[in-house]
Image 1 (tube, rainbow, N blue to C red):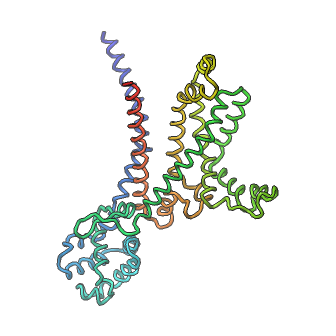
Image 2 (image 1 turned 135 degrees about the vertical axis):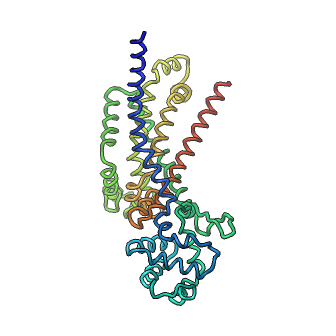
Length: 392
């Protein structure tokens, strides 16, 4: 009895140990980076830690005290810290970088009063500059989300929509629209290929699978570059069109929406085809044969017998393509025009060029929220359909 109990405990311990390995890996490769991105989107320690004295004074307090606290904070910064604070504040308002750097370098010669600051530089008499400093002097901030959504909080505490502040919302809308277009194209093109691979002869299936897997194993950058070569004005496609006299001059096929859609569809097509093939191969051929024997035509058999059972593969393939396309960067950047760039392009721009990690993180979190909302909506819709079918 004791041996059996000991063996059971040992088995449970081994199972828990094996289970802990994927949980730890999941936390390291997914949860930890996600938590880091979320924290970066609201983190303002780079500025908050630099303006400790100014933070201790009420925003509506004595102007001279605020001026003295600001000068004391700037004087306590070294050259690197001063440059970082100037860069971050300059993101909020152009001209802040020069103002902060010159004020910080001459802090000892400036009278620690509001009049002394204004006498040094008239910009310190502009309330907008003070409002920006006060709003960005805390350890946490919502300014990145406010910029991403165009929403802001007025001095009275009211939520307002900044004029022209919907630029990133429009980019998100464009991203969703392009993603939906690519998803539909991959399904329309991929379904017949998957059907041929699943129901065709061994030779047909082998050829289709070889083409799909060859594309799948080729680098995204290589496939995208190939389309740039094919679609450019002096490329192969335009050469053929002109040679066949279908056009007298090259057609603009690249650096626009058409080029982006063609290249993205080609890159993502295997992700739609493979799930559909897997589902289609589980559909018994005998069902279609029985339908034909009962008098149904080929079209009716397909629509009423075969297609409903393949919808699961269509949903899996379409969902996979949709989620992958949302984060596409390289392909639309190389084949699309200025008005065809997706949200990932601007996230990369904030990371690589302006070094604005907070804004890049906020846009990444919003993109993640879009995916979560869409997936949750799809699950709710699936549950509603299943419940309706069960009640029927």
